[in-house]
Length: 194
Image (cartoon, rainbow, N blue to C red):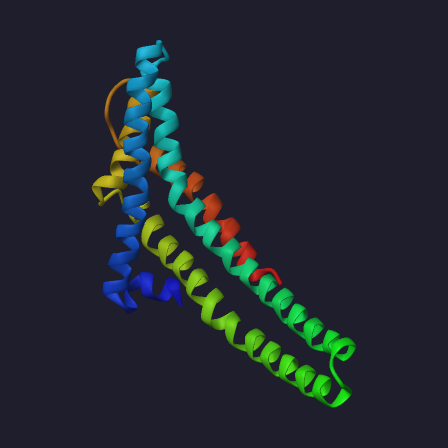
């Protein structure tokens, strides 16, 4: 769903996902500039801090996507625990209530648990996983092409850190694309794994 939106099926949401990826990169870049100034005050090499910041800026959208997938998978586990706890409470009513009342409580607990398991998966996990896919479909192609200023800035910063001059060569963009794809690949692997 998210990848489909990202490749142009719903342009408004694709733009929103791109803005989300841009915002995460800008946050890292802003924190990096503060870190560079603080590191310069303590005598740390500016180019080293600039390089680390550039790599972190490239990894943050993928890390956010991975966190969304982990959250989606966690909600699926939590819903099962909640359902089991509800059924256990219903079964415990046999110790405190007459058997006719306890049977009704148990039936109600089973019904509520079944509804919670059936409805909470698609309603909670699917949007989180969809947003993760949308971020990947928007961010990775823009990093590869270097058309967006934010993604080009990360490549430029790393080039400045490595070679002492600004630049956005294709080889460095490909290297950063591979680095950025690692957390997205981990997120996709988690989605595909049962």
